[in-house]
Amino acid sequence: MADKRTVALDLATPGMDAEGRPIRVPIGVAEGPGPEPDFSSERLLLNVGPQHPATHGVLRLVVELDGEVVTRVVPHIGYLHSGFEKLGEYRHYNQIIPLTDRTDYLAPMANNVALAMAAEQLMGIEVTERCQVLRVIACELSRIISHLVWLGTTAVDIGAFTPFLWTFQEREKVYDLQEAWTGARLTTSVARVGGMMADLPDGFEPKLREFCQAFPGVLDEVDRLLTRNGIWIARLQGIGIMTGEEAINYGLSGPMLRASGVPYDVRKDRPYLDYETYDFEVPIGEHGDVYDRYLVRMEEMRQSVRILEQALDRLPDGALNVDDPRVILPPKSTAMSDMEAMIFHFKQVMEGVPAPVGEVYTAIENGKGELGYYFVSDGTAKPVRWRIRPPSFLNIAALPKMAEGHLFADLIAINASVDIVMGEIDR
Amino acid sequence: MAIRVVVVKRPEREISYLRAALKGMAMTFRHLLQKKFTMQYPEQRSTDDWSLSPRWRGTHRMLTDEQGRAKCVACGLCPQICPANCIKLVPGEDEVGHRYPLIYEIDEFRCVFCGYCQEVCPEEAIHVGVHYENAEYERERFVYDLERLCAQTHPVSTLWDPSDPKGE
Ligand code: SF4
Ligand code: SF4
Image (cartoon, rainbow over all chains, first blue to last red):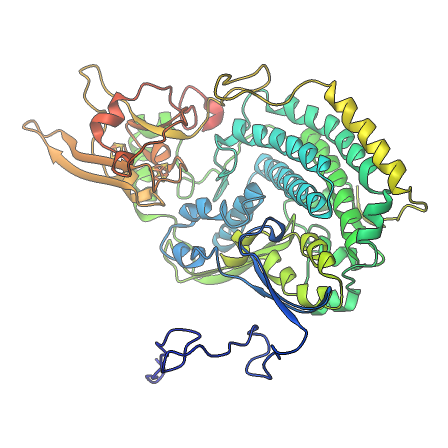
């Protein structure tokens, strides 16, 4: 143990000095104690959010404006902090899965899968082939709904309302599929360590095929409305540019990184779930502006449909869960009749599934970027530390870089293009 | 079979906002004539293409045996697994040594409807149900006691139920 440390706590009301007079608070933490903004100048300080539809969640942006031009912008986060990582330390690996529904709640199934994959890597479990294909389906459906929300809300921010209704309608269809499969529309909890919560219900595959057929049509319609539209182009092209090098230095990932021309996709570069055996394209942009991010995401949705179709074609029969009574609960009928299965059932629920000592980092390509889960295990059934690498958190950090110098209205477009979800930023 | 990288191309020509607006309007009006997607809830609760999934994880229900007693044997698995810590169980034992729950309460407010309680219950006693309209006027009413859980009549989720082998 390290030596005892004494920490001086400042218990005074923030923003007040000892006599209770308001003190000047620097608007950003990034700068540290630096020169304070000159409030007497012509600059205007503006709060956007935390309750504002254009900030896509409870994000607060403190913006310094010189006329219409953004001179500084400081994102303030933490309004949706739920302590997921800490809660996870008191739960068995399987019990963490409902928490992951709520981090990136726009793509819950992919989050569930990522967590199960991390725990499996820690425990050295190989999942079955059918399970892998089902997980690919889960991940790609998640990517589609995540991008759909992004597309709809971004269009609203720019001033086009119709695509919002169409994309959300498609999203409802995916939710219907999720509901049929998992029994919940949003809080899916679909994965389990070593398998899945449940197999696909009857009638799921034809419905998914139907969706795969109809969905590109809707994308085409949105495409016809927006892609060549003069207003759309004028609002998005040349805005919020990140070069490839800057994007890498800021730690961006996902469509944000690829729009800047860096062909990095976890599915391609560190394949998981047998992604290397699927046939699809990774779209990248050339200019790194908001418009390229739009094009990249549109193309990714099309590619996701291709992957879904291939997954449906290859969906193998066979066992869904690994055949290991230590990690997978026995089916209900056996658990109630067979004494041995019953003992395993009780042992597993009461004690959880212990993981060997060690640490793992597992990343998947989520809709918003590289989603990573990091576990440290001390050999018990609960992690000592669970850390999420949320793509939105790193992507939003580049917002000041992208927005400063642009008009205020462009800030909204740039913020929309980052595609954040506060659940995973604040965790 | 391969993963390829492609550069997305920008359109070469843009169309003027006036034409784009007219085109968009024409497209939107065409949608007006298509099949309606919305549903008039609460008058209408299901449509031809959608009704609540039989796997729905909603308001809990405790199943009872022939004598109307709760099937629960107070084994303690569900309060142990519940990730939201919302099940309160105090076990009791009758004269012949049968365990039963003295107190069994679920706080539907804390509950996250993960369904783990049903997944682990060895007696098929506690279930999540195909039901969602459980609003109340008071907070206290959200804590369902054993009596209320047993009195629920909605169908139970087919997840983790031998009747739906695919649901495990
Ligand atoms: S559904 Fe989940 S959160 Fe609700 S009581 Fe059951 S185990 Fe607890
Ligand atoms: S798991 Fe089932 S039997 Fe055990 S305490 Fe819960 S409801 Fe009762």
